[in-house]
Figure 1 (spheres, rainbow, N blue to C red):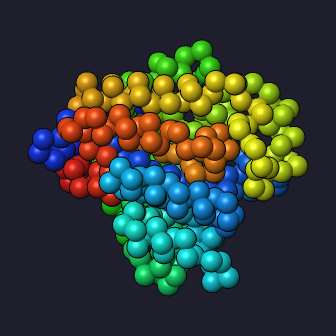
Figure 2: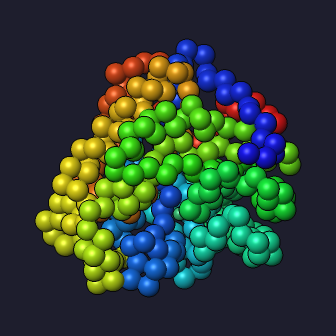
Length: 312
Ligand SMILES: [Zn+2]
């Protein structure tokens, strides 16, 4: 690894043994789209899902964090659901304008996307984004990309969350429960602070690791991707039967690990993935119940978490 990486100390609030930051990227993911294009023009069923997730967290007196693509905030788009997310006290930040990878070589495009989305956040929501989630996730984050780091800093961000290191298969995904220990925050030489995605994403888990019928996945995506699921949808037909059970087990195992090791754990999920794979919303309450049983566990957002990271 290059040396563009200075590990940073995370100091949790007094009395806390570990902390979980729960974040959701609100994409209409390209992997669920007939045309393969990811965008932020959220369909009504996913808007409802986001507000339901807020309610689920609120029932445990917790807050959650959404990362929103800017093209879904253009003037013709409804942003009432995002206003409601903010009014209810949850966090909202940006995820670029069109889901462009932060590692792109097109620096002009990167600068435009961050700037335009900042403008839309201000105009449509009266809100300033302070933390940036990188579309897709990259092993090694933005190392070796000083100009990209500069463009991000120049658009007002001190923190970015874009490193994602897990390459697991169905046989060994449980080996990644130690992920948080190996993926703690660090500063790039530019001063930009990286807060990696520390455990498997739902897209990675359900649509790759747990996918046992590629053809069923492709057929669904082409015919019905980005549509609401039909009445009575219980699980996605392309995953293993026990995928959701395993997903919950995986998270409770990571939780035990971060509790044992006194760590910060940053989670990256998607409302759309949980809408498809966890229609009854079992994952979030299972994790929040685990946390509620332990008074020394903090659950918050990535905006909360960056306050616990020493400055670069
Ligand atoms: Zn995304």
